[in-house]
Image (cartoon, rainbow, N blue to C red; front, top):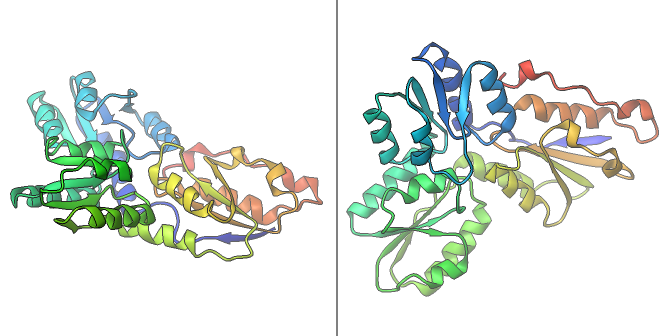
Length: 303
């Protein structure tokens, strides 16, 4: 089978940095906890657990609430960032803090704080319940407004001056549409798009893939917002399957297909994506011996 391995794909610099900081934390004050999934990929969470690093992740609890379950040792702030309240509470509890926040997320937080000081309110385009959005909104819950759709903008008073910014992993196309709509109904609004460069170029690569591709595989965790956005963009004109690993790939999907494309979310281990690419390259619909899948070598997840 012909395979187009879309580039760039996979790990961004923020994910690489967060994983490396977690791996290095083994020499820190014990026990070691991560406040939520360090990045949105269960394979990485499981690999770190085998190294003695526990993830505290309870559905519907905020980072501040999760901190109630950590009483000693070291706490790692995930790549998605956290509010000042989380850092303050961790210090009050006497915890050793490792801040693995993505530098692009920190940049967005700094922007929000600066614009608030200038008298603006913030319209933050993001995903409800996402930890990155949670951290941004918590900077000032009265003046930072979560925007998920056009209807949210319709509820915003028009007499205030606003700055629009966004969660770094959002679809740049969705952000553009919401920004244009905001400009059409709000007279005093400035745009400060904060889609990170890694997210942007991955989405553009998906948007501009070859026309003769029959099927697209996006490798990543279903919790990963940037993985979901890649799949959404690709699905506009292609058959798309979002899979966590090679085991999820159904041979039936490949019947009659000549050319496949593969990309992956920014938190997807390179090893898992390469497994999918290697399998597809050797796949021959007329030869059942090419249907066998190699098992996952879990020792390579953090490589």
